[in-house]
Image 1 (cartoon, rainbow, N blue to C red):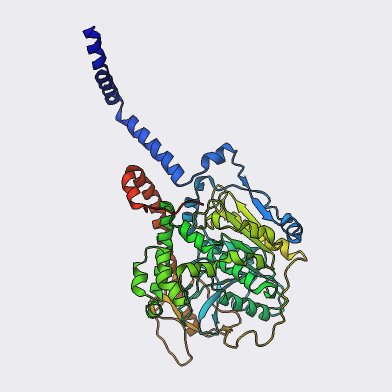
Image 2 (image 1 turned 90 degrees about the vertical axis):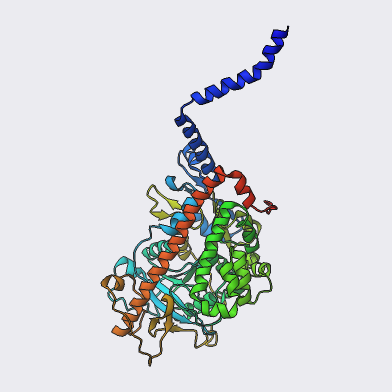
Length: 544
């Protein structure tokens, strides 16, 4: 009896001993293989890959979800004829992650190569920003003289593009859009935000997420200058928010025949809470903040006078930057009041123009929680197209990722709308007082000044420039349409191009850092889980 009890007491120790011996007997390579498998599973979920899902579906992709009013004449007469948004979207297999797609479009992009024509717009408040044109004749090779612009009687549709946050006409996704739209036979103009595109800020007014005054003046100018050409608008990200807000503010009076909003944030307050919720979103928050800090540093003279410069430099999040810069410059009482005032979601019901909205469920920057589903369904002038995958402004398709799905969808929609009788016609009768005399295209020379920026030059000024290489002179064409450009003026413009290239390189490096951070953070979170938990806030914002 005592022997039995003794053997039972020794059983656990013997069992653990045997387990230890068995564990030691397993080859180290097998442990490494198991660890690699666990890391792969973690990364697959952390980076939200959907390759297996695509594989199991036979790489057929997922259907695009459409939200619209059943009584909408706009849907039945126009959108119902658009085959692309009634089909399926399949992401490039080796980019089957919203984070990979978003990072790839920003620091690789595979954008087509072409040259813009540049015009400078002087606003009535003294501000200056650039309009970068790409004519269909430039892409199709029919242009005989690059200095010849558009005639006032031209009936070719004009597509106005409004960039996203800290983006300009050189951004890869905008170059994809501009080139492919021009190939369809239309003239494209990118309305760069103030202080971007290599243009210095010449007033105390800066753009923000709800700044609609500049595009309002641009649309009025284009409508007056080319009265026979229908005008379409495409807004991307923050540019989409600005566009929808403008369409709602001006209602029937907008001189826009139709519009498209791609990856709009819709509700900035919801978006601000979303982007600081998880570790992966915080990486985007930090990257966008770095981009805004770089923008502020280019205009340090104005920001140091109008805002809290020390707070700008120390900002770690978008909300910090908005508190120390945007709210002070824009005279908003609080950050939340700024977000509420500038959100386009409250203007959706007032839109009177045919509007196609494109979003995706896995957008890592603009959350699906902010999409105004009911408001879009209630407005007969709006159709909301939502894909299951796509990332932020990416939507790569094809095995080589050479094209963007949303660009094809936008061009098909504009083509169908242009051939239909449902294009919007402005009910406002333009008068000579609608446009300020100062708010015109300035054809005068623009020179490069400090930090790669561009400023207007008086005829009396005689700046001196360094010699440029042949490569620098060929990077881009920024001659203004219908302008008489002397050799001296040309050298000024060529110098501006060199700095634009440098700015573009710095933007790529920021997104490359985000890409590396995504992969590094996921691995570190797996190996040091406890330490990662300490980094996260004690009371995270609950999911809605």
